[in-house]
Length: 483
Image 1 (spheres, rainbow, N blue to C red):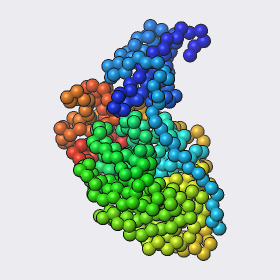
Image 2 (image 1 turned 45 degrees about the horizontal axis):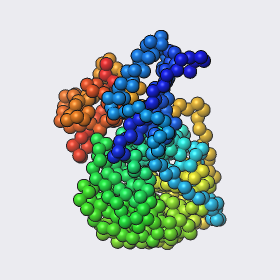
Image 3 (image 1 turned 90 degrees about the horizontal axis):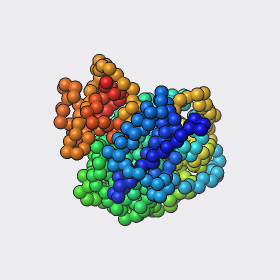
Image 4 (image 1 turned 120 degrees about the vertical axis):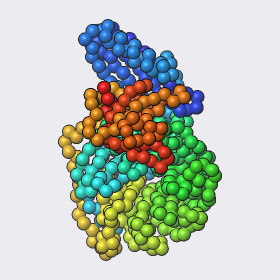
């Protein structure tokens, strides 16, 4: 702020009793400068600063912002009087590995902060850490892009084309376009542990062992309280939602109509993985257990030497991989025979994913590690032969893409580019919905669209929309305002 400037500050909060909002908005005017600070209550938040030609214009712009927020339910408040959102950062121990050698690591990328989030698709590897950094790399370890999110990344999940990051600020960010945005805002009384998304439906497991299901419009569908606590596993498919907690694994009907089965596990569940016909639960009592999706029956048990932080399999469960609290990674065959135990070459693997004969780990020391998991490499590792790992370097001055938090943050276009789709905000029974106006699309279907950038009557241009099985459209690519 300018030295000696006359400063006025207005602080507002939106904290609803049902926990669906827990946010603040602060506007400070100092002469010709307007600084806006916003975020979840109790956090530092993000800031935006704008300079105007005169103080009068600055005051008018600030008043407009305050009025907009007041219409949305924000009210004057005193900073610090409301408690911040409950956030549990996973506290884990990580001891050095006692294994005789390191796993067949091909390359390693260090992010600088403990990492939980991982997703690997056909083109890219994604890693998200507790500093809020998300990096994308190609399969050979070249860093392609970086996102800077407001809070620590709990996990990264994919739903067809779309990539989502669940964060400690209670938001789930869509990272599928160049500019990320908040697609879901989870109620403040839900202390998020893990997330999964299937056909646009968000499934949230939490500290108390609860399960919350939220539809594509970011509106609550149903919730269940499990037989345990500390629910670190949530996986979903067309048949069921598989919820792992301290009491075992419970399979629920996707519509919330009840449970299919419940299976106690050997120890509380710390991680979950799914294949077409089975789910795998890694537990605090040093095992991974394979459960039938149809009946919940335990089909096989894979024994490790420490608490299992993560697990994954090759297709069909040909190989089963696990990582423990002592920085080791294990490989088993389908029937539970241990083939090897080797070090990760870094910290303990908090999450992992298998794809195309490679095993990707993210660790307590913030590394994304690529392991050769081909049959030949597995056999060679049994005989003590592993490659020399390559350390990946971060490209200098790689810009961090921050989320769009208001319509004004979007790029604007004066006409519709060829092949693009136009969507419009419309009032629907007191709610602001988004529908497609381009010909050839069903105008009665709603569009999954970030609430933070919706404005009454506003029109937007998107690269494409795709029909989802639930009777709605999902945006693909960048979002721009149509002037």
